[in-house]
Image 1 (cartoon, rainbow, N blue to C red):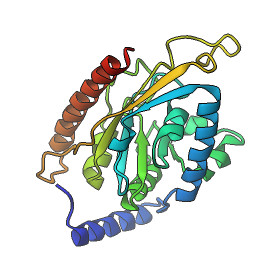
Image 2 (image 1 turned 90 degrees about the vertical axis):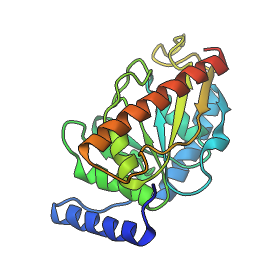
Image 3 (image 1 turned 30 degrees about the vertical axis):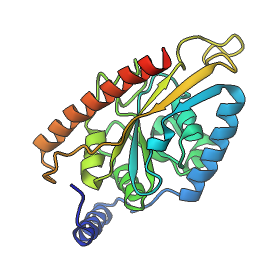
Image 4 (image 1 turned 180 degrees about the vertical axis):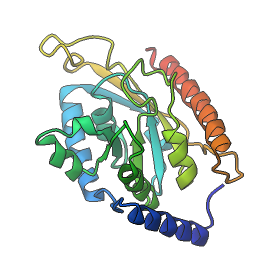
Length: 239
């Protein structure tokens, strides 16, 4: 169930005021920066590999949306940035923001998050992306792993319930199948990587509740949908 526009605006104002009082600045990552990042992603991903994109039309053309992506390789995020039909603001671990990458990633509208604590600044920034009608990219497993959505954290459900934004599942397949000869840490140059977008869905049950139980129930529903999408994407691509 979506928020009533006026109630939603009042609630967001109250939440932002609470964040300011708690010391967390209300900042919305740059949409123009994310658009520049998308352009860079397109050039790099299509220049180095051969992405095959399926179902991109399933991403809503406007309005807030969360892209939930499986994560098994370092190129999964850049690959999605270069293949998604809209600019994406990713939640990225703060450890990636080192040296010149810090201003570069921030300039591209990406969101730095401290995974060791409740990062209120990152939460506010991510909600700001959705409140302004943008696209938030999340790796719901929290870190690179098997990329099978087997272990989901509650962060995805939190943002979905808090914002009312629909979730679009995304499966990136082929990034870990083989190692490149020139750079062992990357897939072989010009190899095919599949990016499969699924149908958008709502995380909530329609009640509008945001209790701990509602969060847990939403996490279970989300995991079921993401796992089903991944299995379907593997069948569809033959991976």
